[in-house]
Length: 64
Image (cartoon, rainbow, N blue to C red; front, side):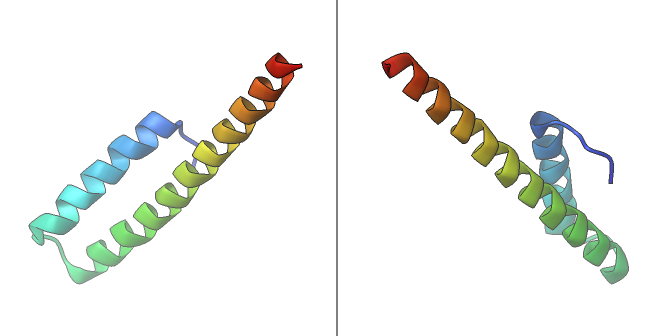
């Protein structure tokens, strides 16, 4: 999977969620989408954690 930015990852997660909620796709496609969604969710969490760490670091530098 190519690396995409946070906003695009969230948009794709929303697409996947909508497709899964409709239930109009095959079981195999549902499994593929679910797997893609879990990878995207993990990447988003990692991005958020990295951003939080940067903010904490910058905030600490400003306090000095």
